[in-house]
Image 1 (cartoon, protein in one colour):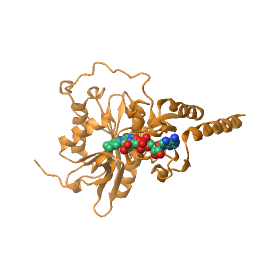
Image 2 (cartoon, rainbow, N blue to C red):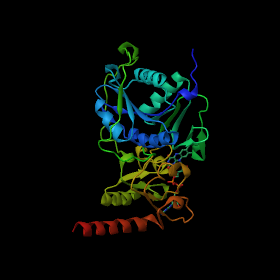
Image 3 (cartoon, rainbow, N blue to C red):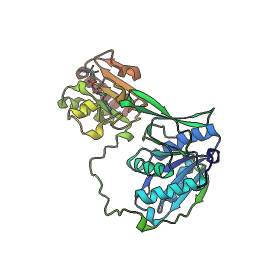
Length: 341
Ligand SMILES: Cc1cc2nc3c(=O)[nH]c(=O)nc-3n(C[C@H](O)[C@H](O)[C@H](O)COP(=O)(O)OP(=O)(O)OC[C@H]3O[C@@H](n4cnc5c(N)ncnc54)[C@H](O)[C@@H]3O)c2cc1C
């Protein structure tokens, strides 16, 4: 086996995730983050696109900042399956040698990244919330919450390449889309065989009515243990209804059975980045904060002035939500009616 020195690995890559031609928005968020890393290293930013009939996404990758796109189109890459996707990505890495490879921490990205990192024998940090370049060493500083979120750990991959990381959707901001921006397209042929795919997709079953897309919501009205009962959710539903927002919950509210788990915001729930986040009867435990502290505006309503949620709140109201929330709902309703009149 020939050994390749780390200096021969150059460039930042982002895996462009798509399912049935539909791109995962986290791919564009990662191109934004990748752009900053590539600029700090003075190297190129490339997207990697695997699939069948997905060439239409190449110009999107350029528009979101990729200098180059490596495209592998093959019928074996039609539906996602671990083995052929991993083999294609491993082979691309071995041929073109990026120093950094980023994937979204979606179920697909988590599955693929583990298979690729083990095949390459390199390091992988899952669920990063921060990525930085150390200018002295050119190493990628991969930061993620550890020990239940009570510690932020910064992890380095010093000796192996590429340095691999997954990042959750909505942790990084979506970069501006630059219409008409051009890049380079590199089509790569990789000999993939259907019989090596190991799995057959028989049927894709869509979960109907369940998807709430909390991570796409612009306004989230989230409740915690302080609500005291499921009935009190009604007040939050009314506020959300007036503002066109979506409900959210702390883990305590989910564990109490007031809302289903897909509403949970936080470290073991969903990371959100709405324009406005209402935290109502939520104390602001670190495991909750890591899932919502990047919201543009945070409104905290809590009767305890010492609650840690007030440290991240843009606006804080100290009081009983049973009085505050109906008053806010009424005032928003009045203001919105006045505006549309
Ligand atoms: C490994 C691990 C992962 C975790 N992951 C998550 C996660 O993803 N998401 C998450 O949320 N948590 C998570 N947790 C749990 C987290 O540590 C907290 O226990 C949880 O966030 C607390 O929820 P809460 O703020 O609703 O409840 P509490 O901490 O009990 O806070 C209730 C708040 O309501 C206020 N209140 C009470 N009555 C009223 C009233 N009438 N009006 C106004 N305010 C009132 C109180 O002052 C208090 O601040 C995790 C924990 C661990 C160990």
